[in-house]
Length: 181
Image (cartoon, rainbow, N blue to C red; front, top):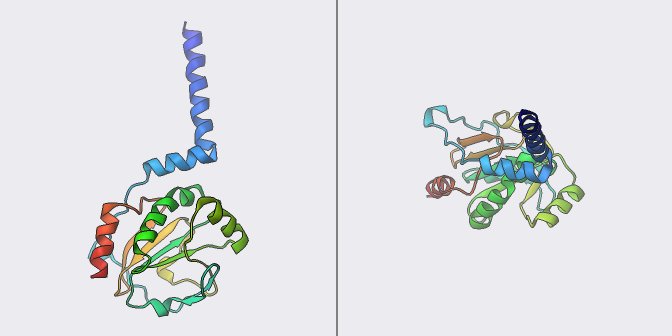
């Protein structure tokens, strides 16, 4: 009996590990454990000091961050091959659909448009997506993706989240509504 129980436990463990490594299951699992990000306390909010950041529009016009001064920004660094990025994109899509007229959404990637376009077509996404032409502001630097920032009209980073999150939460919607007032 011990022999069968021991093998059964090992088989179940191997199956669970296999499912976590299988990309669709991995994305689903990441989505399950993604929570709404925390809002930075006012004393910890960084100010974006350099708004001169040039972006090459892949499915939209080229842009310079300084044209978006005094606007609420949602900036996400992501990639189509990144499971945490893929996991959070449906929640970004829902937020984008409801706030795209009032909030500036900037999804930034190092990938070419052909790769991004195939992914967007498959998933039904239509985010404005950019490549960097100049170095990003130091407040956005980092090697982790996804890395997402919500910046208020006064250039303060209200949310800085590295890793997957649920962006379509009541907390985020309430925050955006407050920032847009």
